[in-house]
Amino acid sequence: MTETLLPDLAPAYGEIFMAIGAMALLMLGVFRGNKSTELVSLLTAAVMIITLIITVTWNSTAVYTFENMFVVDRFTSFMKILVLVASALAVFMSMQYFKDEKEERFEYPILVLLATLGMMVMISANDLMSLYMGLELQSLSLYVLASIRRDSELATEAGLKYFVLGALSSGILLFGSSLIYGFVGSTNFTVIGETLSQASHGPDIGVIIGMVLVLAGLAFKISAVPFHMWTPDVYQGAPTPVTAFFAVAPKVAALALLVRVLYVPFGEMSESWTQVIVFMSLASMVLGSVAAVVQTNIKRLMAYSSIGHIGFALVGLAAGSQEGLRGLVIYMAIYLVMNVGTFACILAMRRKDGMVEDISDLAGLAQTRPAMATALGIFMLSLAGIPPLAGFWGKWYVFKAVIATAVADPMATNYGLITLAVIGVIASVVGAYYYLNIIKVMFFNEPEAEFVLQKSRKLKAIMGVSAALMVLFLLPQINAPVLEYARMAAAALIS
Image 1 (tube, rainbow, N blue to C red):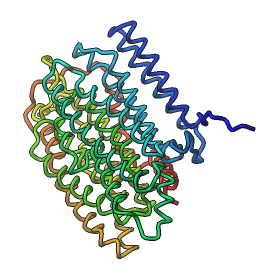
Image 2 (image 1 turned 120 degrees about the horizontal axis):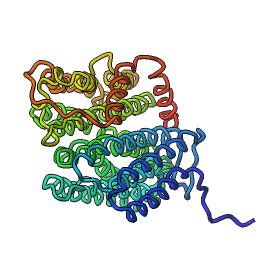
Image 3 (image 1 turned 90 degrees about the horizontal axis):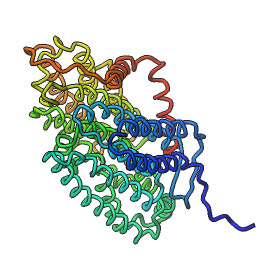
Image 4 (image 1 turned 90 degrees about the vertical axis):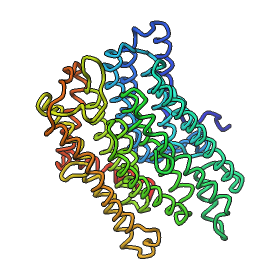
């Protein structure tokens, strides 16, 4: 019997459905114009929800297809669920904003859908080629989203900076990939891992340099120091719904890709990459905590906050254990809810003359909008890691994992894991200052002019549900599914 040339498409049904949906919605938008923006947004969210159902119902075994370039397992499924939830919420959060700004464009939800498709491919990538294809599909969409307000100088500047620096990071990643291919002879993650594990003399210097360059390219996508320079300007310049999208979904996808790149092809080189991850984690936590103290614009503050939180997430990766990876997955799930809720509150910061973004504009919010002030206060306390809110438990799991690794293997202290944990706790305390300052402004300062009453029920629901999840995370009914799925996701990569 002749071998079929068609690959098994079943593992990629979700991605295929999203691609077809994006093309269909693009045609709908082209024929009906910007008046179809609300309909296209709702249909985009529907496509994401159906893809989410397809992802959730997929079986638990690891399946490879497209010549082993694409993989689906419990780890990819969980991270895809996070990305799809974040992307769908970003679409819902944007609808009222663009309507109020009278800037409805049907292209926006379609670009979000295409970016999400790229993220899905990134998460399932098992080859340097599929990695780059997913990464560029995501990046090209994000470049346009950052500058979608063509009449705004800030948005145009944000898009240009993001494009130039993003192109540079893509070039670095490509150069690293070419070095790996030149020295190993393959771009497939599984083959690279097997080749390096069988090398009697250890990895060639070219492979090590190639791996570091690939890490540098991926570090740009997660805003890890020292590749964070684009983040504050892009967060401030992009429209707030776009910033909300940038803050969550691309970070989750790029971290998932980083984890697979380190554990599958370069698992045998952990001594080399652990030092890099420890440095990026330390630098991100310190810079994110210190630089945010002087910020007056809440979106710039959230940019530095996201840099710091990526540093905390990398603590789990630096542990190099199944427990550490489980902690990272839990952290990103909690990070998603915290940030989505916070940006829902920022989107509600509107007065008659338009959006406001200064922290000082929140003065006396507790007296004029007590429900919004309470929700934002919960998010700030959770971002600061104050117990018993969910943000505390996210940090608890990653720090617990890195300390367990250091205690179990005294040689691991050579990589500074104990120092990493200590500085992480100190950075968390420093970072609490600017989160608590926002609470102080809301509850104790003299009231400013009142915000316009929020019309969007979707935005109110997102704020309320997110705040409730932060408070109720201790309940087994809330945390048990997350903890168990995170454990299975980690076990899919590290046995």
